[in-house]
Image 1 (cartoon, rainbow, N blue to C red):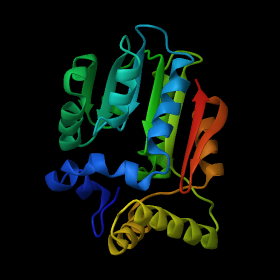
Image 2 (image 1 turned 90 degrees about the vertical axis):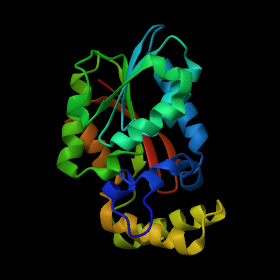
Image 3 (image 1 turned 135 degrees about the horizontal axis):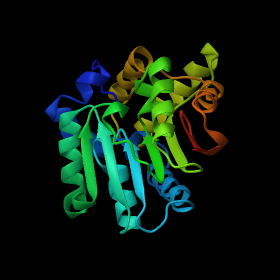
Image 4 (image 1 turned 60 degrees about the vertical axis):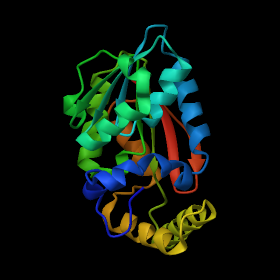
Length: 231
């Protein structure tokens, strides 16, 4: 969640905001828990016992905890550019942290692999189009052939009237989840100003250009969409 009047960099470097992060996604992402559960099941279709999974944007540790609890033999490498978010991930994971290696930085900080699967949940909308493509290329380079890549982020039609409608719905959902109406509207404005939200067509094109195939939409929750694609 991007708080009012705060840039994404500030949001993930301010200790007070980071401490509140784990409460945010379930209140602004429709079906957040089920989206994570579906992501886990998509990984499990291909990840074997003892499999190794790369998690891009792992700060906070929410998806890492979900994956690790569901499949006790899997191990994980997580990358995130925020040291404070990595610290939060360690707290979130608790004893599960013994199966996770966390790396501070962008995709370049991730080990070479090869990995059995990768995820990037609620992260790509922070990246510019060139950096998003580069990240997807580097993820694919680290995957075994045929391995799944599960990606979820904000993605809405390019037309301005459509964008206005969907961002209003984003705010309405946040308000219905108990977020103060003023804060929800400010958050919506901050997202428009600071995030790089592409259209679904652009998002799928990036995955294809990065070398992924069999790209399938598996999740839509108002402004958020999720795909699974294969290396």
